[in-house]
Image 1 (tube, rainbow, N blue to C red):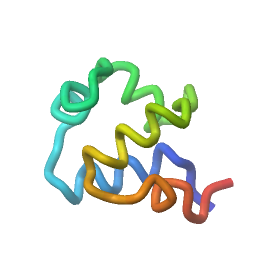
Image 2 (cartoon, one colour):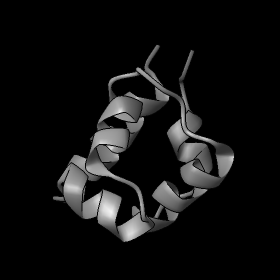
Image 3 (cartoon, rainbow, N blue to C red):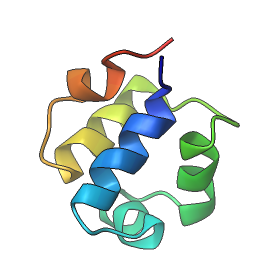
Length: 67
C-alpha cells in the first residue's frame, strides 16, 4: 500500500516538477505540499483535485492503491 502523498510525489517527479513549482501552480506553499507528500497532513478533496489537474491526471489516480 502507498499513501496519497507517495502518489503525488511519484506523479510530480515524473512531470519533472519541484514542490515549489507544483505549489505555486495550485496556490499552496511548498511546505504544505511537503507535509502532504510525507503524510503529516491530508489534503482536502478540493486541494487533491487541484493537484491532479496541475499534474494532468485524474484525482482518482492519486487515490489508487492507498491505505
